[in-house]
Image (cartoon, rainbow, N blue to C red):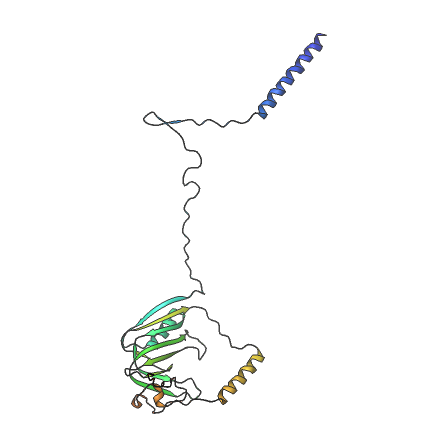
Length: 252
């Protein structure tokens, strides 16, 4: 009888312990109390909560590009000194830097310019004297470059209003500082167009019709009063870049 009572008491005691343990698990967790920090003057200083400032968002080291992309394009403002050859200066720049140059514009004055016409005749005209650059376009590639790609096309205005233009042949001597705006590049691909055989046949037909069509024959006066003594060979080819003089305007 006594052993049965002791066993019951032990079972009741185990149940009480289980209830207390279960209650401890189910009880909400209370945050730990933050101990106040006592300052030098004895006042309580509250400790800030969260991460310290700057512990997460630390400054990252800058990214430095040590090698330029091969397809990058640079803009250049080139000044050619007086007495220097503009064409030769650009060619030397392209050869030394191993970069192709696309000439966008030019300003300044040049002297004794020799121009070649783009037709099959290849007539060369030399203009003596000092001329102002109206337009300067072209491309210059470092060697080795395919023939016919490198070259400059220039439009000039004389002191008396005469205008002429063509492909630069030989020296282009600067008469005073000449400013050239250009873009340079490293890689260039050479393609022959058109690529399709049908397009080639169409292009040949268009070229045949163009040569058989009407053609304007400019005269010496079409060059805005270009004096005859400024032209070396005494003749002006029909392909000379020229504009016919406009008609006189009258008031009505």
